[in-house]
Image (cartoon, rainbow, N blue to C red; front, top):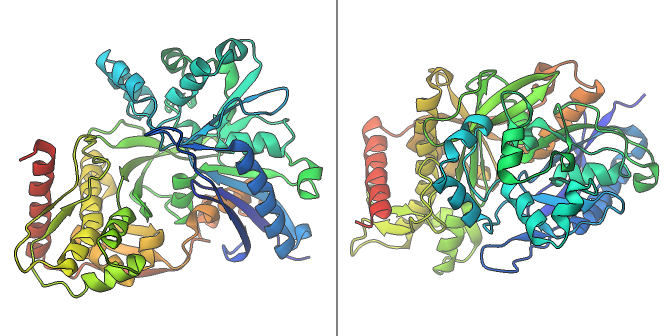
Length: 496
């Protein structure tokens, strides 16, 4: 009999992909579709939930056919985490477009709740901050702004969930309304200690409990697909939010193991084990995974601008994308002293300063585009150093002598950037040779849920091969660069 294969659905912000993996973690087939974004007002970002489902079905079918439908043992799902949908229970029709995690329409709600003194309690229960980024205020907005929605929700006529819940409900023909603990932990509605929806948070954000999905382990029974959708019934056995799926895909299952994903922005997570404690350094404390009823936690830091800084340099006339920016950066003068703070949309963790704006410091008459290009790449590494220092303060036990950072995402394809990251953070870097670690993580959870892997350790062993980079920069050079960075951060935050 042929070995079983796992079909992973990776529903992201800009695309929907399906990848088929074998038990060793090797991809054997894939398919993808772009996803349209809608921007109805300044700061608003929406998706068409029906388009997401249709694209999901198309890529699942295409990848299945390429790999051999009879060999697929299970489906794993990973998704953009905080994006929400509210739909009719009877018809399956969304009552509004999906509100995307990037959407800022509930900023005033968050500011009001902060002013009323609720943030400390929200953080204590959920590990999160009061920010429009998360799902709870989005659901409340939909119930209050779509005519009749709140009354219908209270009557039990509506359902709500993140994208994983929406896709599961549709794939199972409306038989299963479920999510996993990682996605639930990003809603502002979930008590991460009790591992249950929080009545206190539901009341605070005005969300009826009847709307919400059942919360299950990341490797669990999420039902069977309706046979007419994919041509045969398939079990859905793994679900995780995208960054937690990537943490699994990188094999970060032990305390202190960390990963950073470099795309438009950067998401960095460190596994902190079974003990939950809210961050003292303005990071997010979140669920890393829940398997066999055992919850592990992570600290997470978000950088708003990473690869987007290279796009900004492209806009100054450096044609050729990120590769051209990197090639130019390698010609920069040594010790040029230029610092870029890419706070184009404010500063993320650990500063959380929405009013900060981007700036260049240290310009002289002999500064050229090469120095600015290198400063843009260095800003990604120095922001990562900010997160590392915050994480070290919150979880010192996780940072031993042999700590390493496992990286993936578009920028991680670069050998030069990987070395620069090691140099400026002072931490060994392991670059994944296969970059689709998010989809791989979903497949590994599904493999656990269907018995392809005996335990978490066996699943994590399927992580991609890596290339290692050790710091080569002198301690003096690294600390001088970081001191210039912190001085520049202070200036953009105070306007000095």
